Amino acid sequence: MFNESWPWKRDLAESADRLEEARFGLALRLDQVHDRDDAYEEETEAVYQVERDVMSGAFATRRLIGMPLKVTKGARATKATVTRFPLRDGATAPDAWDALGYLEMYETATPNTAMISANELCNLFVHSLIFRLAWTQEGLSWPDYRSLSEEDPRSEATPMELAGLLVATDRSSSAHLTFVDLLEVVRVFRVLANDEVAQVTRFRDRRGRFHSNAT
View 1 (cartoon, rainbow, N blue to C red):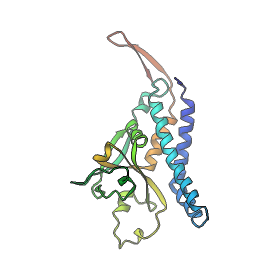
View 2 (cartoon, rainbow, N blue to C red):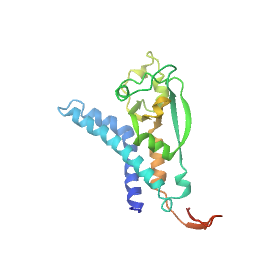
View 3 (cartoon, rainbow, N blue to C red):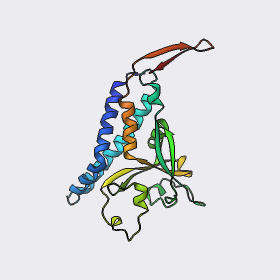
View 4 (cartoon, rainbow, N blue to C red):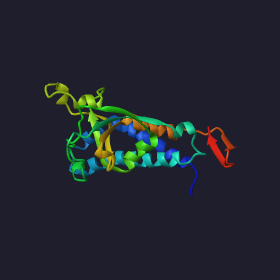
């Protein structure tokens, strides 16, 4: 099996850079092509590139976590902070068609903060049933933007900041919908991409088996 880490880290860093740029750049790009004859194709391509960078970055992160001599123990233990919205009482978990709709089966008014491993975060993306871009007004968190009243003038303006992603797998969707801040995705990707192993320690356990630890 291919066991060199630097190409994975290089491409992961590039994905992180592009995602950070998309925070405000995606809305500008979509606005620029809005009135063009090929607007649909251009908009699709722009959104696809974000999805591609999230998916390829998640796969690269999982791959690096699985290379214990190429990534430090601290980097592999990276956690991510996410927000979860529970499935409403009595609601049915979405199927593939529901996942394309309004997701009203989730209670977005009662968010719960959770800490999950980088690997669990990446699995949400790689195995996603639901994968949505979440938009907000600049400087306003997505949950706060979602809770704006119709009378609030900020609710009428077009949101220009890509706040993050709404995601759920076929399993997690039966319990909750997860919001991941875009900058949190970028942070996790960069932790793995910029990680450097300074020393590899090998030791034998009580049963005589050899182990290695990268620091």
